[in-house]
Image (cartoon, rainbow, N blue to C red; front, top):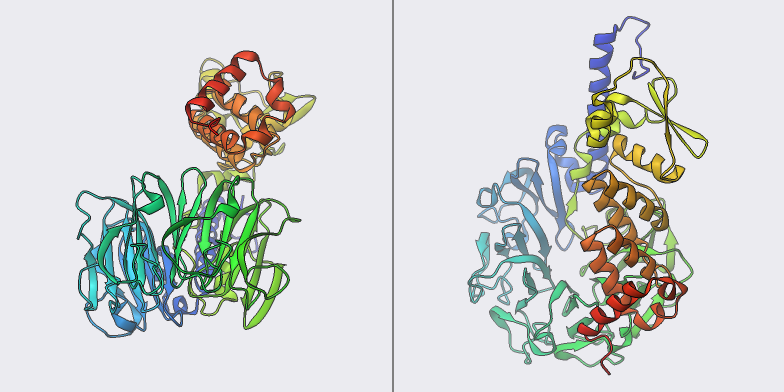
Length: 562
């Protein structure tokens, strides 16, 4: 029951309808509160705001925005500098205008430059560009501005793209098979072609990236970064502030490996105006480059030519954020705490400052200058009330339950109907036995109380909150009950919580429960940190067959080469 009445005059039917209306208002209000942190979106009506699924605010003054609706329609609003709205003309607009050229497309990646020019990759691998083109940053072989989204195809036959990144006036695009293409302004070598001549059309970045599988790209104003699948990081372009992380301030015309991070496995890299942040698979944060506003978080304003660890005394970091048009940095920890530093509302914050924000996106909306978005913002998880959310409050409620489980002497209260609907295991269990007697008790001996309670809670909420070690037990349960979605969630938890000390234990669990993706992840982590992993107790406590298989597999991957 909703618990809301109007002087006793709302009957059960009308109360149910009223509760539903209240839920819709709450959900739409939640979306609106997220979006209108950026002033441009206050120009949208309530109906238009509720329809937003993805959005990005960009431009030199954060005066342009693009958004995608739930029906995959594209709309833009704002100043339209250099035709960056893609509407086919140079007119500004305070009312949303449709981008018919992109209707029905699904966005995989979106980025913008300082002109601004705009790049967009679709989920089907298409690459679109429009806006400013004074340095051929649109990749069409000319310097003419493009007022509408246009496919980028020169030198790209048969290529499919999954990620894009824009510097001030240069562009990077990453293919699905791990190749990087670059074009545009190249005064400092940011295109990576080995020269400083501007590149009018896409050209593959080779050099030290030849034969490497790149999984991520990022751009500073006039510098470029590429993250390889084995955790190596490469940089090139302008280096006057040490933003390439190479230990010096000399520009580089082709990719160079950041040897200072050797032995670490980077899993995320972002670039600010002239500084960079990298996050390792162990949750360690490193920063380097310009520091005039404290954007490195080192406690001072001295530039760093090599990566230095930041927030070492804090808990594990799970996300870092920066944007090439700002001097602001942000990070989110494993428990959901959000920190900010650098240029914050005109102030220089030289150490990571704990905020009340719930996401790194909030930092850029509220304190960055300009207040742009550092990534394409997705609102897909906020757009409707799921069944699990509606039922979640009734989980483990003795008042409404008609069944209880006894695990390690503790009760968990549930509803037969929910379990039967949500889980084939229980559907089969109750098929031949559906008693009307309330408060039946089922004894569970195979699993621990935290694991089994988390499983039942998942059936109500679609969420799992367990430490990695307990997630192994839940992975065992998910495997036994053939709950594939739960199995995937457990694997995600284990990946986020992997450390040198528990890596081999988690690898053994992945092998035991036939979790192939998790097994590959844990194996790669063990290989990347081989020396330290082999010194842990977990490594020597596994059975001989498992140890032999790991050594043979690691050898085939070249882990023991000098």
